[in-house]
Image (cartoon, rainbow, N blue to C red; front, side, top):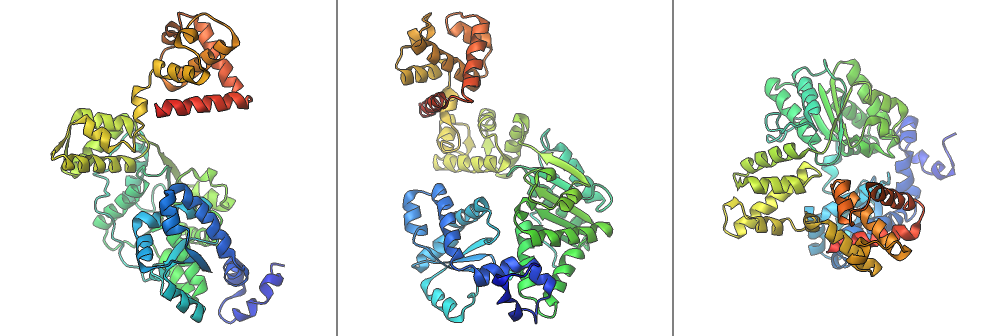
Length: 492
């Protein structure tokens, strides 16, 4: 029996508007809104721990530490600040992102958003025992379907294609040309900032231009969940349930971004499952994105994972060097700013993780060039200064000498000793550590390393590398020593 003493006191108050099935689906909501005393304090303490890792100690103490959690309101953690200035600051994108990032890291299904109010609003909130007019309430409500405005800069024409994304682009284009007839569902997975959202908007822009009457719904998983919460908690005579079903199940194309955020949201998984089935059986197109392959979404119900895998699953990986060069050239052209070939190559070689970081790097470079009254990015010193926080400059001067110097400094021996013929333990271990780090950090032939260490046999170099590698698995002292030396190398 799913009813227990915790819920028995509140269920009668909701029976007149919410069905038994809805209570089962959303007992979690009732739990934290009615019975979980001071849960908001525990959650806020955990969020504060995460925020403190991302901001400076001064900013943390000044803007975050003194916030007071007073309520969990259907996923919204209400925080009270001391002034209007603090409220406005924390509402800005630069600070709001810290709340969002900490919520994602915490991954607690009870909280989906932090809302900051001031002291006067706190009094109103407590007096009325309900939420004040929160800015996000309109976003969570289920509005009538209106044509979604896709980003006009995200098209197939300006999507830079390379080995890392060509299959995903081709599959998405086929879907845009024949929605519901090929690759249904289409599941695109890959890391942050690699172009998944660009592809979704490109599909939307293409279909809209060729079939303006098509009912296309693009939404984040978070927004889908918020809509579902609203349909349950604000239901009257099944009106909101009907609106929810009509909104999502009447779509010709449903594009759902970041489905990994369904973690811990069992009821929402149920809603997506039934929505998926209805659309699929009606031959409507479904496109989903995630940061990993559906088989790795272990928190999803098996039946939902199975449906996600039933179509075409394609990945987008980090762009290779040639693709990064092409991306930089394309973005520079869009920014109407000239970059010399050497600068393009320098950025492509050093910003390797994702496209968003490349875009951010270009904006910094352009800004620094303009500060120096330059209309072309061709000065490496300016570029290095602009990207000093994005590029590990030490990696550009990393050599066998610099690594060996760090090892010698740590073990208090000379370079002559480490490269010489002594085999005593106090010399042999540092030598092996140096060989191991050189082979791991530098792309050098083993023969080159052999020559550097006095012409030692090739087998000696291999033995040193393998010995340290194996010892690191069990020797905690050696593990600490190698970690300390790495830190020295990074700081030099």
